[in-house]
Structures are given as structure tokens and as C-alpha cells.
Amino acid sequence: MGPPGSGKGTQAILLSEKFNLYYFETSKILEEKFALAKRGEKIEVEGKKYSILKEKERWLKGELCSPPFVTFLVKEKIKQLFKEGKNLILAGSPRTVYEAERIMPQIEKLYGKKNIKIFLLEISPKETLQRNSQRKICELMRHPIIFSPQTKNLKICPLDGSRLIKRKGLDDPKTIIKRIEAYQKETLPVIEYFKKQKYKVIKINGSPPPAQVFNDILKHLK
Image (cartoon, rainbow, N blue to C red; front, side, top):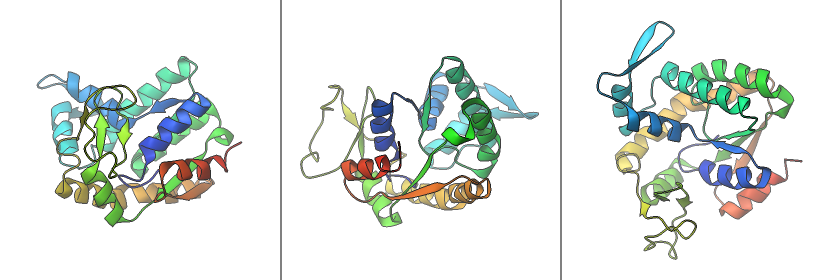
């Protein structure tokens, strides 16, 4: 868990490779659903219908998608992955208390509460704005590329050879500010939910280089 730009995706990739985990990226699941959506297509959840294209509009503006809509997609995917025998690492999910109340019991039932580890990467809003506005990801495998003087003019991902792109709309400064506000209002309360449910939330300083953050996380894992 952590605010936009705190390094959740980077650490998820590193941990998934080290421990052979499926990197469960909620934003990627949403992107796939939006890419295949047809005009007028809706999903019904708890008796209410949600327009996929309207949810896409919210997402592009930096707003959180409707929790029931996201929860439905996430739970279906988790169920599928469990049947395939895959262990998971989630980055930034659940995003709201609504989602947590419905997703966490499912994960507990399938994988066991003692096997759930929660980390909170912490960085300041100023650093979030700086990181996200300069961030690039690779087109093929979505590797995040850390901004630095060495990578400033990089156009090709050194890991898979695909083009480096900016997430149009999502990483514009105005959108990032909205995303920070949404995180503080909607996602931070999830941390309190975890604590009430007797989960240990391990706080990690997300400001150092990714290698140091990774080592700090490993110290808490057996």
C-alpha cells in the first residue's frame, strides 16, 4: 500500500520475481476491461448497473472508480488465480474500505490470514507529484522507469526493448493532485481497517532508492 508514486509497482515486481508471486495489479485489470469495453456495456453488482465507459472516464480524470465495480473485477480475478494455484502480491489494493470489507475476507478464506503480509510505503505529497509527473513506463510489460539524470532521455526500456511512454492523463500534474486527494480520503482509511482486523501494517520509508526499499521490506519477510 502507499500513495501514488511511492514505488508500489516497482516493489511488487521485485517481490513477485523473488518469491514467484503473481503480480496482481488492479489498474492493469481495469485497463484491460476498459480496452475491451463496448459502447453501452454494463456490469451489474449488488443490483446496480455500472457503465464500463463511464467508469473509464472517472479513471482517466484521476478519480477512483466505483468501489462495487472494482470489487467485482478484483474478486473474480482472485478466484480465478487461486484455482490456478497462484500466490499473489497486490499493489494498492484494496483502494477503499468498501473494497477491503469484501476482498479481505475472500483472501483470508482462500489463502489464510497468517499468510497475509501488509506493507505501507510512505512518501510526501510533494514527492508523489514530482515522481508521477516525470514517470515513464514501458509499453510492453509496464516496467516503471525511475526518473534520474541517467534515464531522463531514455526512450527504450532496457529490460524488454519496448517504447517508454507516459500515462496520458493519469500522470498530468492536475490529475496527480486529484489522485493524492483521493488516496488521502478513500485509501488511507483502509489502513485503519487493517489495524481493526488485527493485521500488522509494516511501515516502510519509500523515499530511498528502490534497492534500499526492497531490502527494508525483505528484512520483515522470512
